Image (cartoon, rainbow, N blue to C red; front, side, top):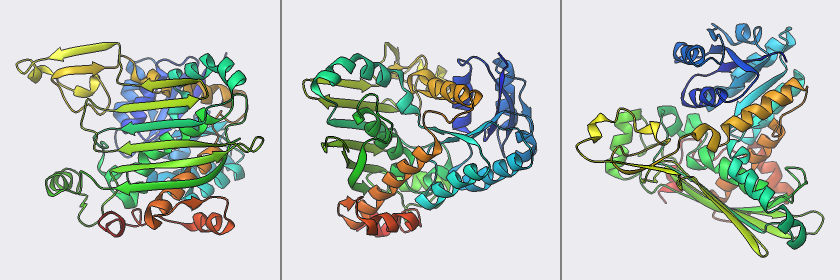
Length: 414
């Protein structure tokens, strides 16, 4: 079997996490990277971990000439320009089989739709990276409960939460560059995994029809003077002027088009979860059965006392977004696999090699963006958004959340 050649655009936190995941995927080499910063470090990581003789390329076009697929791990605000360059390279003769985009696909529905149309015009297969749908615990839960679902009926309520103490990089805190706050950053994860587990087994991923969204956003921690100053000093982002949501919660209602049954997905996300570090929580309730996933219920715990704490060089070797280097700590030995990064990379590579879209194509990412925009609209208007209303559907096409416009004070300080 010929080794698949993958190129990276972007070498920040998420690029490094995917490089770690690819050490566990067969048949793929990371052969190149283009990034404004971190490219040399990522290339060295790839070489030292035997996942490819990774070269640093001066442009997206040059990278595209030397790989089979490109993964876009660059910041949200740069996506449209980068994907345009990739598609131009493909039209100019680069033999690309596909392109990957890390979530979210777009900061608005219009931006996401532009990206979908660009790849269609270049005849490129796509993979939308939503890692939580690929988590082994989620897949195992659905497989284990397959007989119960067939006998008793599908799940009727799903709940999903992703929470931690906040992003790594400054641009992520800036709502005008990132596209919002925690709802844009992590709400897409929770909404997607709810939709997925509620879908009857054997049906397409968009089988259930979204009917309505009701959501709230808030600024609970990072708008307080102490934390606002800390954020300003660290990132240069001033939440007294351009605040973003650090907490979001809501419910998406879906309808089964065959049975007309309504089911609900509840999402909760925050950047003010000051506990061990990143926590993923999902559960699903069906008639007579249920499942629950909690990423902090780890098989490994360690204890580090005060005297030994200074020896901890990097708390995140134990857990992503870890906020402590002492006390009783949860340790995840293989986060890249637990969170679904390994499986989503494997799916994309196999799909592209076979000449088809991944399990989650960009058209799916477009639908998730629509639901996130509807959630922001609901929070702004303080009302349930009827997704079946043609007027609402038209409004969403050009809608930009006030928070993403830099006008979050109008929503979060009222």
